Image 1 (spheres, helix red, strand yellow):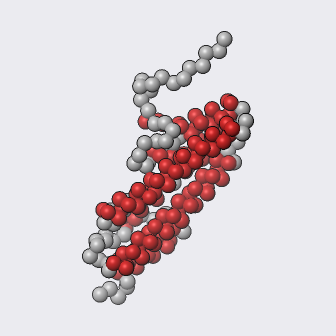
Image 2: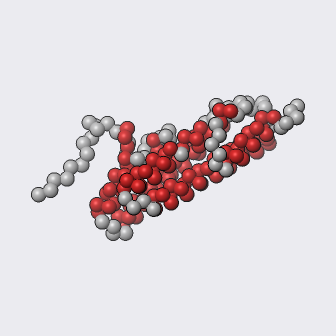
Amino acid sequence: MWLTGGHYEAWASFLERWGAGEALDPASLPALSTEDLAGDSWQRLVERITAALSQRLKSWSETLSREISGAGDEFSAARALNHARWSLPPIRALAGAGALPAEVSTRLLALVDDQIRDSQRQLDEQTDRMRRAGLPYSAVEARLRTIRDNPLTVLAAGPHVTDAGWAADPAARPRRRVIVD
């Protein structure tokens, strides 16, 4: 019997602070196994972890959206994408925390990676909307190039939606050449 609340309380306290945006390391959390908590306690804890991840991902998404919308040039758009990508490791670190049972962390990582891929897909769709809205061809192509060169999905465990980004082999497929008369 724990007088201080034990592992559940340590996780709950951590999740509350981490979800609010504090920079905390999930490596400091006590390891959990399926025998540590009753079934309903496991469910509540997983719901709390999911809620904290959702809170951080929502904040991440809002920040990315605001920065991309406010980007006046491609350098600013690339910087926004890079800042967004730098914000993802702490989120993935909690989802894949070694203190969680493998089946729980696998499901949580899949949820986070799906959100990252969905955000990348939305960026691609936004570029298509720019094209349909009649923006200049050069502006649309520049934005598409920025998105492809700075993929959010580099950290996710799946293929990039638009291109391989920096991981692409430059010898495998030559880039498009534009020959001007």
